[in-house]
Length: 288
Image (cartoon, rainbow, N blue to C red):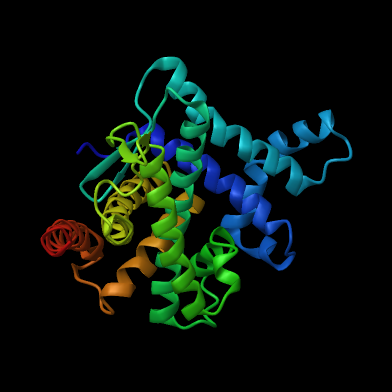
């Protein structure tokens, strides 16, 4: 199955920025986080533009309107262009039914929920590794990104994330054009379980394991951003990229692997996580 496209990640990034703006509007302390502050600064003009149209609209409500607009825009563009609207979960590719706009919109919303759950899994892993009281800027940023999951105790948050993953992937399957319908009392209806009662569990496990591939790709992207920042002498960009590289690397390996000033830890982890992702997907396939 083909990997998610660049447009998918740009679209997802825009939704995550808007989600950060909405979530951070209800807590003043988060403004001290560099990443949250940058997200709010980036969205200041779009939000104030919405408020200029609706003067009594609060900033979080204006961001929420933009969030819904971007969420629906993906379905509209896919339907207008005739290009597939899909989400890759493990080795399965779920494609939205573009013949029905409500189904395509529901697919788009469920796709974002899966990404949000994966972000919370990353947060929970970092909290488990570095402690719940960690004040690291990356963990604080993820606390904002993953609201309302981050408001729960870790155990409850993990359970809620698992349930949401199963619900979101099943919702995407129900809104998919690829699944054959089933007969219920002589009526043809969409098949949300892809012909298997274990589909929700299997899809949720696939989505959780996909985090390994996302982290691996993220490490490689951060390496390029760090190098680009150094070449352009952009210290803020270099510093932010190195901060994410450091905490993600320390999660797996306490001591760096390198020669002199060169740190090869992120590059090694990129290949290790990529292979681990492929192997574990095969294990899940064989078991379920």
